[in-house]
Length: 160
Image (cartoon, rainbow, N blue to C red; front, top):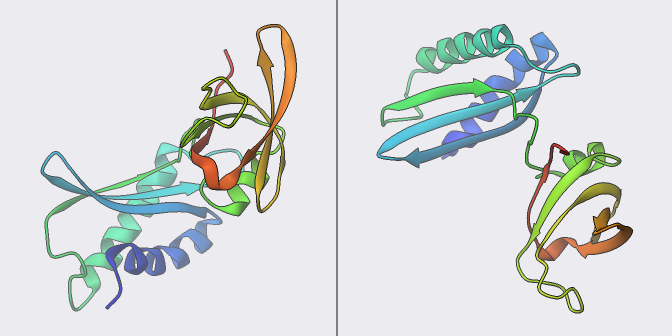
């Protein structure tokens, strides 16, 4: 039996194709006693509120038309953009983030880094095993290769 995320991913795909949008992520989570079905969509130039409403309406209709409800509990449907500080999850997310400002948190500090577990800087390269980030250490520009298996979280960041 398909999970809620798999079912929704399959249902939303033709809707997004029609609008020329991209599916960024789907999550079904419980927060504060309520269930949330979140669908994150994107397109070149960004997503508008109207875009979210159109996808939400179309997806709701498709979910309601199914002969058997894939989500037995009550839930809130949220359709939105992944945001300016979107998480980097898939390989294509990392590729798109090259030459952009990122925030990377590690599970544990790397040897010789004096306990540092967070890096913010420009993502200059990505491969299967490493992320290369150019960052400022006080007044000096430095480059570090971060092992991907050590990355707890990576996201785009806004530079202040």
